[in-house]
Amino acid sequence: MTSNNQITKNLSPNNVIETAIRLLLILFIATLCFQIIQPFIIPVIWAAIIAVALFPIYSRLNNILGGRNKLTATLYIITAISLLLGPSILLTTSVVETSTELANNFTNGTLAIPRPNKSINDWPVIGTQIYELWDQASTNLDTTLKQHIPEIKQAGKTLLSAIAGVGGSVLQFIFSIIISGIFLINTQNSYKLTIKIASRLTDKQQGLQLANLAIATIRSVAQGVIGVAVIQAILGGMGMYFMDIPGWGLWTVLILILAVAQLPPLIILGPVIFYAFSISDTTPAIIFTIWSMLVSMSDGLLKPLFLGRGMATPMLVILLGAIGGMMLFGILGLFIGAITLALGYELFIAWLDKEN
Image (cartoon, rainbow, N blue to C red):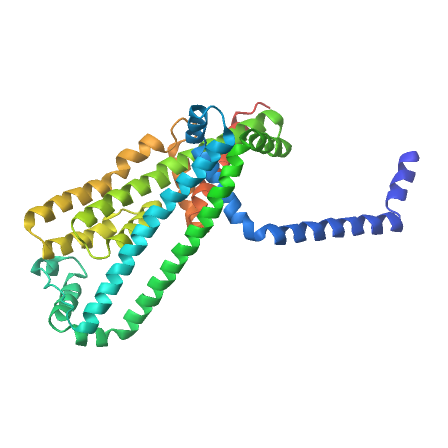
C-alpha cells in the first residue's frame, strides 16, 4: 500500500513538471557547454593522442632532468614545435620557390619543358596521352597552356587551398602540442581520470584494462602508421631532393598523405622516376629508381615491427580500424577507428569467453 502511494506521489503533475524542467535545464547546460568547447575539441583530442604517444620519450627525458616536470615540458614543447615548423617551412619554401621560378620563367619566355622519353608511349592505358601532351608542351608551351586554361585554373585553386589548409593544420598542431605539454605535466591525474571514466562505463577491473588498451593502441598506430608514413616521406623526399626534382617538397607531402592512407608511395614516385630518366643520366636515374622501390616497399618491413607491438589485439584489427577510421573521419580517424575497433574486439572476446 505504501509503495503504491509513493508511485502515485512520484507521478503527480507537480513532480512530473519539476522533473521535466530539471531535464530541460540539464539538456540546456550540456548543449551550451558543448557549443562553448566545440572549437577546442579536435585540438584537445590531438593533444591527448600526442601526449599518450610521446609519454615514453617524455618520461625518459624527465628522468634525465631529475624529475623537473615543468622544465621537461618546456623543453618538450619547444623541441616539438621546432620539429613541426622546420619541415613545414622547408616544404612550403620548396613549393613557393618552384612556383615562383615557373611563373618568372613563363613571364620572361624562358620556360623550357624537356622532351619526353619515347618509352612513355609504352605505359599502359595513359602512356600515349601523356606522351602527346608532354611532347606538345615541350615544343609549343603557349598553345598547350591555352588549350587547358580551365584545368590549370582548377589545379591552381586546389593547390592554394591545400597550402592554406596545411598552414591552418600547422597552427592547430602547435596549439595541440602546447596542450599536450600540460597533459604530460599532469600525467598521473590524467591517467586516473581516464580510468575513472572507463570504470564508470564498465567496472573497475575492466575499466583499467580498456584504458590501458586505448593507450597501447594510440602508441601502436602512432608508430606503425604515422611513424612509417613519416619515414617513407622523408626517404622519398631525400631521393627527390638529391635528384633535383622540381617541387620535391610538394611531392613529399603527397607521399606522406598517401602513406598515411595506406597507399604505396610509388603512386607519386613512379611518374617521378620516368621524369628522372628524361632529364638525367642513366646511372643516377637507376639509383633513384632502386631507392624509390625500396621506399615504397619499406612499409612491409616496418609495419610488423611497430604496429601492434606488445598488444594482444591482432595487428589486422588495428590496421583495419585505422584505415576504416581514416575513411570516415580523416587523419584523426586513424586513432579513433583503431581504438574503437580494438575496444570492440576485446569486449567481443570477453563476451565469448564469459562463463554462463
